Length: 101
Image 1 (cartoon, helix red, strand yellow):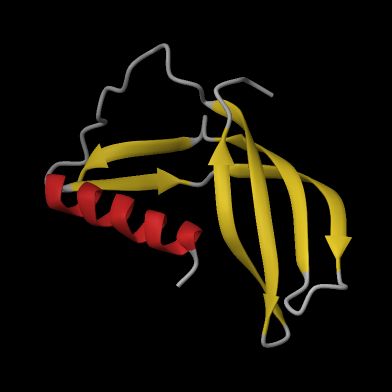
Image 2 (image 1 turned 120 degrees about the vertical axis):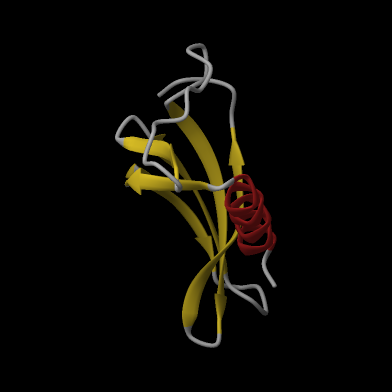
């Protein structure tokens, strides 16, 4: 399993355990970089501006919004590595930078 999928599943399990759900959806703005198709498993790297300003965390039990730290980044740069597995591109790693985009 790709690292990105494993991390996402872990994060989602933690939110579910706390009784939280996310509403809305993030906005993505990928900037494609290089593709290395000479590898046995082709790989691509790119950056993305992830905007989570319209993604709200709420308590599943009553729909009340969860208050998150005001200083957290709601628009940030993510460095992404994708590989081509069985004819499909799969995100294997997404690393958030501590800077806004």
